Every structure is written in C-alpha cells, then in structure tokens.
Length: 207
Image (cartoon, rainbow, N blue to C red; front, top):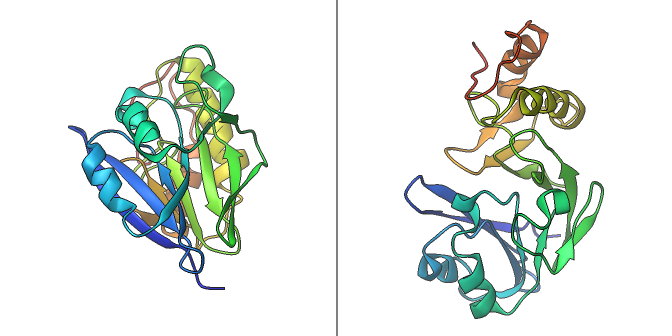
C-alpha cells in the first residue's frame, strides 16, 4: 500500500500547522485544523477529493476558517465532544479508539486531554506518523490553563504518548515535527520530577 501523502500549510498569526493527508491511490483526502487562510487550505487539497475536516481540538487558532472550509468542501466535520456546546458543532463526534478512513488508509483516534478537554490525536495505522495537535511539542507539552489541566497532561503523556514507538513522528499544531524517541529521555525525566504544587501554564522538558 502506498503511504499517505502529508501536506502542510502554516496559517494564521501564530501560526498554526494545518495538515492534509491524501491517499495516492484513491485521491481522497482529509483536512486537519483549518485555522485561517481558506485559499491556502484549499490549495493544500488541490487535485484531491476531500472527505472530512478533522479537528485536533477547538481552540480558536485551529478553527478560524472552519465555517468557510465546511462551506467550500461540503464535507463532515469530525471532532471530540469534550467541549460540546462550547466549541464548534461536529457532524461526527469521535472518541478514544475510533477509526477514520482516508481512502485505503485508516487513522486511529487517541483522546489526549490536558491542553484542552477535546484534544485528540490521529495516528496513521501501519505507519509512524501522528497528528498530535497541541498535545506535545519538540520542547515540552502543550500549555495548560489550570493546575487540573496540567495534571491531566501528565496523565496523557504517561498513558497515551509514552506507549507510542520510538520511531513515531509527531506532527504538532505549531512548530516543527519531531521523532518521539529523540525526546523520550527528556519526557521521562520531566514526568519523574515533582512539579510545584498548583503549577500550570507553559512548560518545557528541562524545567
């Protein structure tokens, strides 16, 4: 089976990494996190047949162009219901362990709360690539907004991220992609530390 083609556009003022995965055999594609710039996102999907818009989470910088892209593509929006009634409405609600088809390929959904309650990751099955949103970056975990959120992030790192193989390539919502194994020792050290009581906010592996 020919691997999925991955394309990226950096959009918005922060900027956000919007991704497209395209099945070379069928031409079917999915779009992740339409944060801004609908024209750039549309170009990302050129010469493919979009079948869905997938949201890693519902922070505004990741969904700024959602309404326009849904109008242009006329495809279902898929997201986790962790902020249902607060975040955008989805046509299909996803949960831990669900699968999403992209042509001949399948994405496996991982629920990864902490940064936000509806954060999910999409792993390409029989591949080493994972779209991780703001779960984890090449220098630390995603920012948290409460002490409870930080503790949830630690749990997500232990239960979701650490079990992935060393060769896993993480594609985050901001910044460069990275190989998980190259960060594993730093993550393990981070998880072994006693962090200040009540801590939350930006964190780095070496803090």
